[in-house]
Image (cartoon, rainbow, N blue to C red; front, side):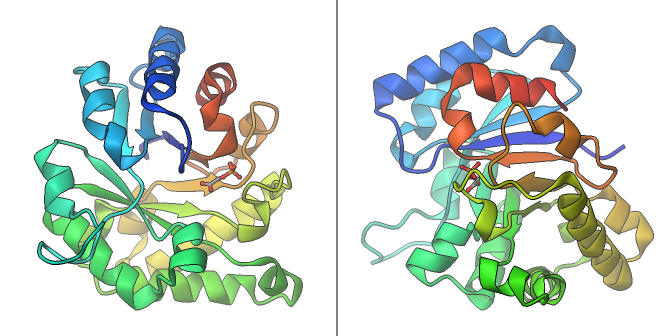
Length: 253
Ligand code: PGA
C-alpha cells in the first residue's frame, strides 16, 4: 500500500494570525476516520513554520512542510533558507521544483537535482513537482517533457533515496486556473511516470512511490481524481486556504 498524502500549498498567503486560525480549523475538522489513512501536510510560508509546527504538536496525521529550500548549505546567500535550517526546526517535508519556482525564479532540472539531494541527505522528504505548460500539452509532447523532468532531477538517486521521495504531477495549465486535468489525463500521466520509474528502478520501487496530482483540486473533483489507481493524493493550492474545502478534499482520499 502506497502512502496517501494530501498536501496544502499555501504559497505566499495569510498573515500569522490567519495561518493559526486556518490550522486550528483544519485540526478540528480532520475527522477520526482519515487518521492513519492519509498524511496531511500543510506547506506554510517560512516565517510560520515553527509556530504552526508547535500548534500541530505531535499529531500523527497533520504535518508541516516548507515550500522551497536552498541548494547551498550555508553562507552569504541573503534571503535564502537552507535545508539544515528547516531540519533544525523539525519540519519533515519540503516542496521542490514547484512550477512557480521554475517559471519565476528560473529553477531548472539541474538545480532541482541538487536541492533534492540536500533534502534527502538531511533525512527529510522532498515533494518533487513536475508538469508541462499549456503549449507542450497542446503540441502533444507532454509525456516526454515530464519524463525528462523526472529523469533529470531524480534518476541519479539510489533506489533507497528514490523510495523516500514523493512526486507531484502538476500540469502548469491547471494550476490556479480552475481548469483541472480530467481524472483520465491525471491517471494517464501518473502511469507514464510510474512506468518510467520502473524502467530505471524496477517495478517494486516504482510501485512504492506516492505520486500526487496538483492543479485546481477542489472538493468536487477530488474524489474522482483520488480514485484513479496511480493517483496517491493531491497537492492543493487555492483550495487549501479554506478549511472546510481543504478538509473535504482530505476526506475524499
Ligand atoms: P491550485 O495550485 O490548486 O491553486 O491550482 C496547486 C499548486 O500550485 O500546487
